[in-house]
Length: 142
Image (tube, rainbow, N blue to C red):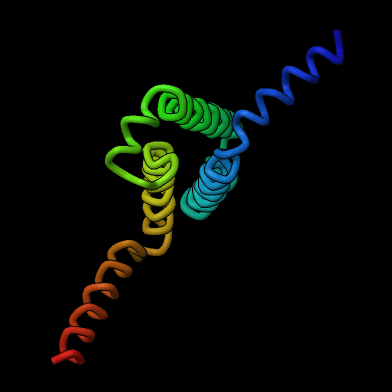
């Protein structure tokens, strides 16, 4: 029984091997969001405001992201791969796009926590930097 279970789990892991890096990216950003949320909570209200119960939301959010990414992967791999191959040549384009979407949500949350503590909006500063750089390159070309 134990060998059958281990073979089954190894089979599942081998099927999910192509998306393992994508899952790692989402898990990393979710953990970063957790740390920034704890930092914000402690900085703004002290340790008395911090509740360990709130950590369960991070676990459920991570599991939801992983389940959704795996679902999109299965949908793309076994149903839509041939159709998508006619239009784009990027392997697992829907899975990568959905992973980017989940990661961007976490980046926005990290930015909000950072802005609440420091008053600086990193994404807005980055956008202004890109705009300045684009303008400088345009002037340089002319």
